[in-house]
Length: 397
Picture 1: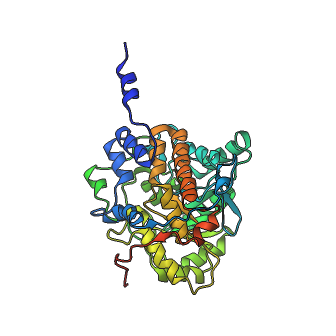
Picture 2 (picture 1 turned 180 degrees about the vertical axis):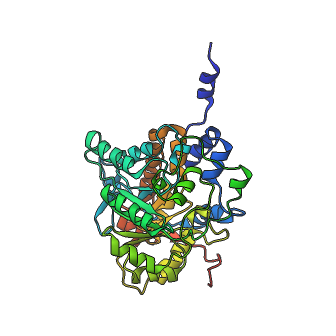
């Protein structure tokens, strides 16, 4: 006689795309944790528009082009080079920095995520508010490459919140350098935490044994936030471009500024000599009614047409399909960062779930390239593939 578990397994929907993983994760996670990951600020209009803005862009494929090289075993057509060709990723998709992975997978957390990053030869951005220390993540990354995936080109980048205590900030940077992280992603859109009402509705608290491990140091303000995630986050609201120059003076790591929406800020980033920017609205978790990221990317690329620059331009927010990756690259991005889809995979099936999510996005991206007549990444940028919606409102600020 079939057990109830066997019957459920037979009737469960196959996990074919990111939304399938989203719905399965929603079923598995507690409402408090699901809302922590999934919701945004205020009325969540920016959160919704990040996704819908990609859908407003239509593709105009080219045909009768030999794209058979995509079908060859070990094809490298989807590979991309980043940071002045210092980094090779298996496809232009990076694991975005997101907090507290142990909420999705209590046993392994970020260690499960980093195993998938190595297996898929992509970059993992480790959050300041990770639930596993940056040292342990680095050790696991190194061991996975050594023992299981010696051909992997995966790297670790460290996402930095600039804290009020500059000594603590400098210590985070030094720890990242010592652990062989290859770049710093400095989040700049968090001078104050956005109005995330779900935290209050759900009385959000960290489960016993889970904390923001990188903040557990000798500074009491950092410790309190790291332990509870309820006190005021110790990020400095006085953060300015001068601090970017200060960080440049104390590290040789490439600097990538995350949280750029306004074209003027993209121009300013060029003047400060950073190696990259991430067009980001913090996943809709900070300023609601902020411009969707793919629309902001378009404005930024237009603004930079007359500028001479060598920095990479990345984008996050709303990427749910391989076609979204292709659209971002067609508008000028070097790669995309994905956050929530990784968390859904992690919640559903740990390392294998994250790997499956990355494999789905890569498979969809490869198919989109083929159907648009693109042999290489460069073809995406030069083939005039997009039909843009010119009716959306551009920012006049």
